[in-house]
Length: 460
Image (cartoon, one colour):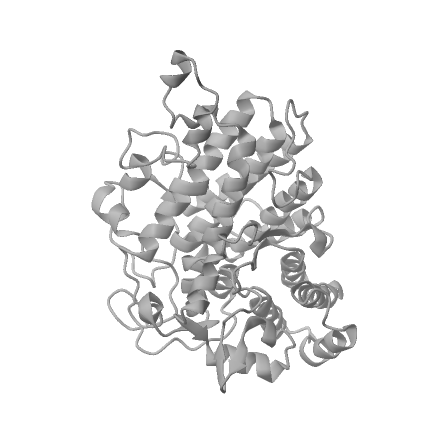
């Protein structure tokens, strides 16, 4: 966090834009790094791209190795394969990048938009900040928040406990929904919103979808909370996406220089498909397998697949995720509810249609559903079926790691060689290690140093 706060105003590299047309001496004497004068519509596309890059980048690869989508065979992913995570490299960079990049920029965007009465920009900013905070806490647990993004003077910001962070996430989303319904003064989001092109109804659905996601994150604490997270998730889903057309998806490839970060891992062959995952797909007869990986010279690789091309999409939150959440939530409320099966079938169908651009024929989907998705009314069996299918559809994302820690599914055997001081017992990791700079320089760093097997609040 020392470096987060040291460089807290190293925001978007757009200071040159502030000098255009500034011929008067008074203007020339202004600090070109004073981002308070950067309009919200300039900050918005940068924030969207930086969040997408972080969500498809290194932490996604690490969690994907933990969840056995991939096998690390070279460079840093090779050590991740045995759950050895150098706290001075990837965790350091990604932790810092969240704070230095989208999180502080979103705070500034919200402040600027609030000052100008641009309530729709405020709502978008709060929605994306909730997404960032949800990602960070589901990876690291307790993290700095309230002090980390509001002062350049505090080099040791306090760590907020995870329960309060989830309260903050829900509060941000509630506030965003109010902003979306408010009168917007001045400029409205438009083409600068590279995801929804200023469609505020889709942003409202996104806020509700994120509310559902983060309520389900805390499902293991049901009975200890002043609310029922399952009931709240179902309530939020009623106002979330109604089809895949509203999904929060960032599409890389706007320019020839803008490649998906995941593309590099596949192109350089740092990772390959995990044989456990390819066998799982084969045994199910899953028609999505060729979209995830390909067989070349009798070996599976990830080159130029749906998620590993330069212009691949990043699935940030989606309609099919909502249907999986609905299926699980209904199962937790009543194992005999017929709408569990309806929601599960729709989740798988929607994902197959989306990822194949509607090229997987309905007869193939129907056959897959009839062979693999029939529920029994037995809670444990049906939960495993739902989460296993969600696991396939959550490929190239971090949510399946959260689902595994919440539910124990899919049933995976830990990688060999994972038993060491950083990960005692050798089990599949429960958290990422904190970055080295936090441990060395933040006086409020958690003590004792947690291992990768120490469970944070919602995982207990």
